[in-house]
Amino acid sequence: MITIAIPFFRDTDLLRKAIQSVLSQTSAEWRLIVVDDSGAESGRETVQAFSDPRIRYVSNLKSLGMAPNWNHCLHLADTPYATLLHADDKLEPCYVDRMLAGWKANPSAALLYCRAQIIDQDGSRAFSLPDAMKSWRSHLAGEGGLDALLRGCFIFCPTVCFRRDSHGQFPQFSTDWKMVQDFDLWAKLLLAGETLVGLPFVGYAYRRHAAGATALYTQSLLRFEEEAKLYEALENRCLAKGWKSAARRAHRKTIVKLNIAYCAFTDLGRGHRAGFLEKLGFLGRVL
Image (tube, rainbow, N blue to C red; front, side):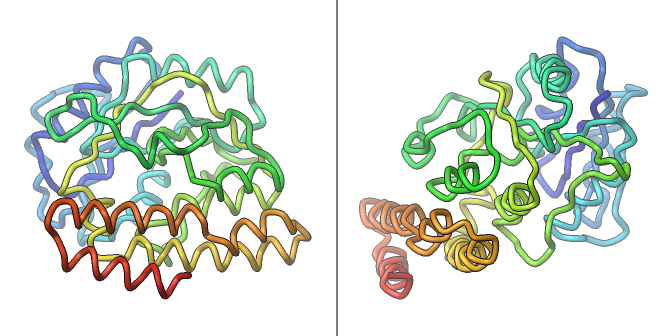
C-alpha cells in the first residue's frame, strides 16, 4: 500500500540504519526503493546486503540533485501512497500502520503528516529550540492553513505520506529551489484548495547533524535567501487570491527574521564571529 522511497547521496552507515527502520515496521504493507543519486552506485552494496525481495535499488545515471531526485522517487512508486524517507533519518515502527489508518479516516486529503522526534548524529534524542517554538496543527485548509505554516512551517517533509491524485500522479516538488521546495509544495496545495492532515503521533526520527543539507544551507545563507524569496512569492500569490491576512503574514517574514537572528547569535556563542556578522548583515537586508 505504501512505497517508502529513500533518496540516497552519501553515508552508507546511516542508510543501513534507515533501511533497518523500514524492516522494523509493525505493518508489512510496504515496499522500499533506494534511489542512489551519488552517481557512483555507492549505496548498491549496502542495499543488496539485506537480500530482501521487498527492497529495490535504483541508481541514477548522473546526479539529479535533491528536488529532482525526490520527484524521481515518487515517479518510481507504484502503490497508492508514497513517502520519502531521508537516508540519514529513521521511521518509528508504527509509521506505516498509523499512516494506513490515517488514510482510511481521511481519504480525500492531499497528504498526511505526523510528528517527528529530533535526534543527533549518534541517534540520541536532541532538543531544537526553533522546532520547539513552532505551533503544530493537525488540519490545514484554505487561508487559515497557509497562515499557520507562514508562522513557522512545522511539517517535516520526510514525515509526509502522499496520495495519488485522480490522474494517478503524486505531487511534484519544484526544481527551482534547493531548500524550500517542501514548503513551496504545501503552499501550492493549500492555494489549490487541497487539505493537509496531520496525525498526532511521533512516527519519525529526524536527524539534525553538521553534515545534513539543512545545516550546510543554513551556514551558507542559501536557506535564508530562499525562505525570503518564497515568502515574497507567497505574498503575491495570496494577494492574487484575496487572502489578505496570509499575505500580511508573508510580507512580515517574522519567523525567517527570528531564525536568522537565532542562528547568528548561536554562531557568536560558538566563537564563529564571521558567521555572526554575515547573518546579521543579511538580517539587515531582509528587514
